[in-house]
Length: 131
Length: 128
Image (cartoon, rainbow over all chains, first blue to last red; front, side, top):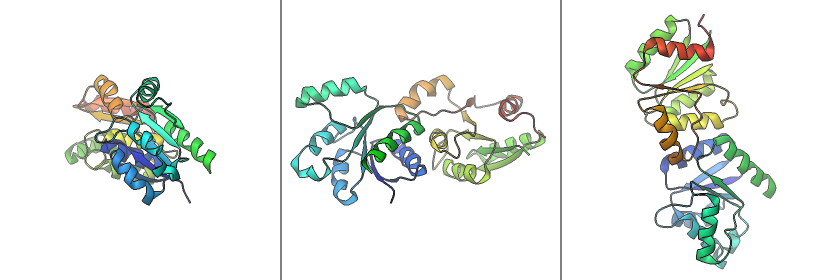
């Protein structure tokens, strides 16, 4: 069975393009438009990997990372996360540390814009590691 | 015969370009939105794809991004047709989208017929 990826991004064009790219690499893809929708979908969808945008309305990617540390989401503690954001990795890291006192603990951090096949490679590495 | 896939929702434009390129000895297949364009690219295996940017279903940027990420399609050169100046969408559109367009060439609309043929020849050589 192909790995299932949950893509979280508020830009509908981005969601659609990511979905088509990842599907062309034979992954199953579901998507959410913000952090709230992402968290509410986790239980039902049980994704193998999360691709998470940071800057989103209502609930952003930082909040999702924080929420996933909560015991309520213990089941998903080992689910890998790839951040896909136009914010530089260092800037996000500092912000998260300032807000929480701990490091932003994600499996990969990809800065937009990115080439589609590079994303596929980075996803592939993580999927290979966990399967 | 060298095959060109033209993807544009403007039927009149498609017809004009088809006549022009066929007269120059190329085979032309058509699609009218990005999704259809991807399907045609997979089915027809063209030597070159000319993609309009503003299209329903899937726009040209996204279609290009998807093509360039697809193992079976990524080697096919893509010319993006746009009414927007190339420097503008390289700097503003792409970062907004978050995915690199990676088109092999860009042509601004309106395009002179000779110019279009020249760009096609750059990738495919002269028609037969």
